[in-house]
Length: 295
Image 1 (cartoon, one colour):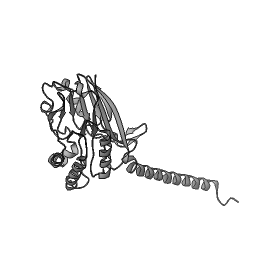
Image 2 (spheres, rainbow, N blue to C red):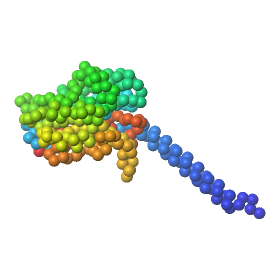
Image 3 (spheres, rainbow, N blue to C red):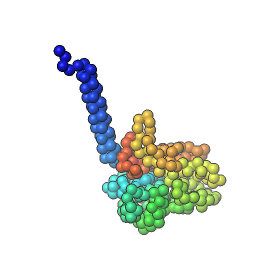
Image 4 (cartoon, rainbow, N blue to C red):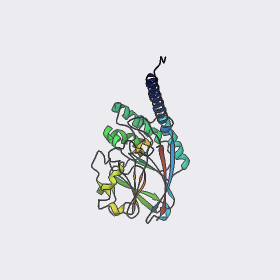
């Protein structure tokens, strides 16, 4: 006599299979989260690009620019990780360092935490040995209050461009460096950010990359040679086939890397830190070295 009917055995087998699947999926999810929150979040990818620039002055041939973006100290970037970026930048010995916004995070903790983090961030960046560095503001900086970020940066030797431009000089030659206010939270005045009659190439910084669609419609677009942005974090969590899980407003079209708009090039840096959750997967933090050459 069968005291354990086949139907009951099948039911129990299905139950065990489902239980194994749930346990296995949970373990895999936990393992993925642990990896993304530790190793994945602390990887640094050095990306080197050669950027052809029209009418590049002789003194700027092979001029090297390092770009970093989206530091987000201390939510969730730790000070030691930013210090590691500073060490690596110093080892590269670039001619210019450009920081394209979001030095802090607007939440989840109180803004007073961000105010303190802005000071710590500025002090760490003072350790950069490059002879020149400049910054712009990002949407998180502007949300917390740009003045709370600009003041410590400038006090520690990092000038900030807000709808303004400066010459970068080498001997008798120069190029123009310009920076917008944060396009995601403010109205940018490109007539103030871009020199009206530049006598040399123009490099333009704006935090949100999708702002390029506005830039190309502006009368001064023909004057810009290179635009640098951040904001997207490269998607932060990128799944095979599916790609980025979440992209921010004004960072959905141009997610990472190099894009061309007629004569102008746009480069989008994946950033240092994270927002939302302290996770990166298949999307390491980026340190970018751009070498200018004559087109």
